[in-house]
Image (cartoon, rainbow, N blue to C red; front, side, top):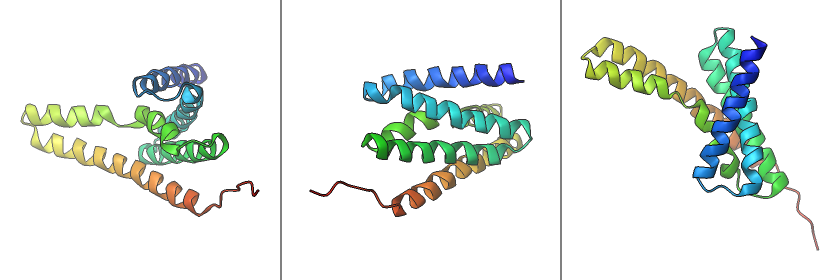
Length: 146
């Protein structure tokens, strides 16, 4: 269990690192984005192990956005540079693929079931991003006064 969790954390770290490279992210944020993704994905996996898939998507994304906003203020860069690459491993791509496969195989009820489930998971991610974005916008930023 712990070995699998650590391996998944490493896989997520590397996937985010290379995705951030593809997006031409600044070199100094590659490690930070990858670490944020690994932490968020690990919390997602922990929730999944307890049978709470939607909660996993919500909390994983919430942690990623929180840490992204925090690092954006510390390093003085836009939060999207940290958040966007970090949230990519959380996107329910398998559910989207299975939905399209079920439609192609003319399994309409299966496609609707998987599709609705996937959309609800994406909705949980969107709610987490919006919630943390609103909270972060209300926190004042300390600036040096000359």
